[in-house]
Length: 277
Image 1 (cartoon, rainbow, N blue to C red):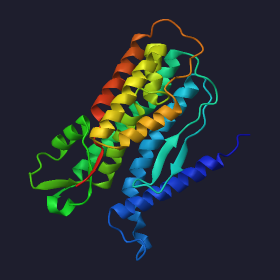
Image 2: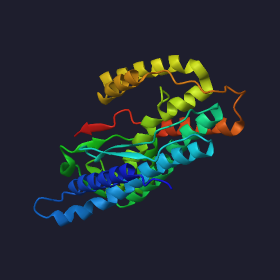
Image 3: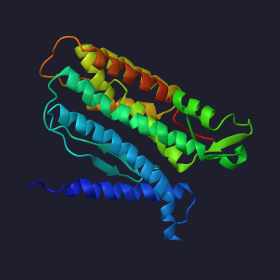
Image 4: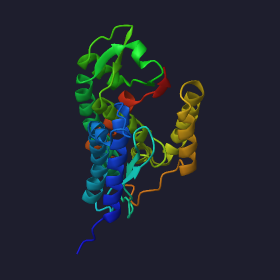
């Protein structure tokens, strides 16, 4: 008889509550005066939770397909502007081959990318163009290549003295795309690190070191958060655990998957994610 995953369920519900809570605050709801207004956080929370769940379950099912034991997703509620630190699954057995490593590593970002892009497009369609004076002092979100393109297609040209007030679903999509790009950085044991190791083997270590230097330079010039990420990735380690069987060259499907992941990383990367106007 299978055990009921109480911890996973509790963490999921806590994260759902925390994201609904901050989502309501983002809409201007005064929850102290009128707690019922918390429902206004549902569009943001449900969109973001679906994006995170899609990403992690894609990893989970890819792991199961390759006979790798993995846990269900652990969601992490947090007092942040999005109400969570994200979610993760734990591998409980080694990944045996490079093919499995690519399938497992790329499945989450690709699936998460697709639902994030859809959420961003839908949310942009419901977003408002407002005078720039209304967003003065607000948090300004940076643009990736993809988000900038979606904005031009869905919203159209924005007047020079105006700005776009993102709908909560668009904000959730933006977060999903940003998280996708972070996960695809080809360093260490990030999803991008799994893919880089499957392609390069031990040669991924110099690449990881170069990227850490580039992130540090980006942090000094543009957004300080990149320095935090560089330090965190150094602490977690740049070297990837070896696979058990280093079989011959990768097949065409895995190579295309790897190049697709690289393409997604390029079009979702945001050099300056956050700024105060």
